[in-house]
Image 1 (cartoon, rainbow, N blue to C red):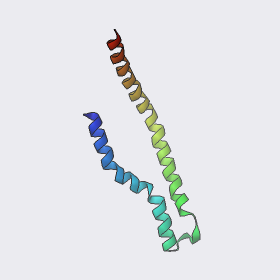
Image 2 (cartoon, one colour):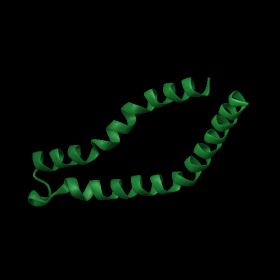
Image 3 (cartoon, rainbow, N blue to C red):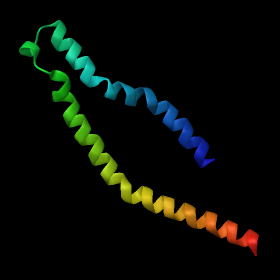
Length: 85
């Protein structure tokens, strides 16, 4: 049940995440269309903070995901060893 809910929520959040990923390209297109910043690479100015935010989110999630994976592996090991005995 938890897995199904997680898949459902991830499908709901996918369009919002893709919109965030497209922000640098959209900013570059707007800057080029309205001739802002005189040809400056706006895409990189928007993409670098986005990269920093994603790296920070990844770093913060490592501990929790590692704990979750370890717990899951222990459950699998317990099932496998019970079947052998």
